[in-house]
Length: 132
Image: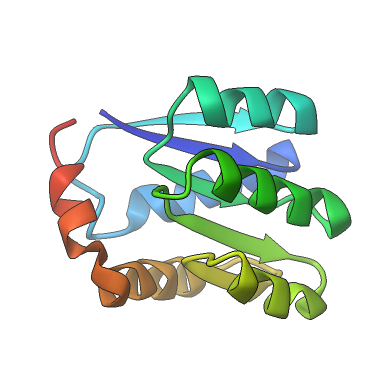
């Protein structure tokens, strides 16, 4: 079971789940999605839920703090960060996000995120999460 943790607005997270579920690289994997919109609860879930992928959709400083905490608690877990502010791009690089993009999200951006994961050596990550 591939555990995917999403942090942000519920409606945006539901749309992100649709895009993720349509990715050919992940389409045959059994997935569990957990949507969190509260920062304190998000951090607890990063630690306790032990996601295989984290997607941060929270805007502004909440998004940056979510990425920071995620990378601090689980540095091995890929992070896709979508922000309402392109100025966080430098922070995403410093925090070693797998993928950063400004909003709005799109299926194409999620496809690019998976491509970045593969390019960064994530092919083994994708392979290891096929069945569990």
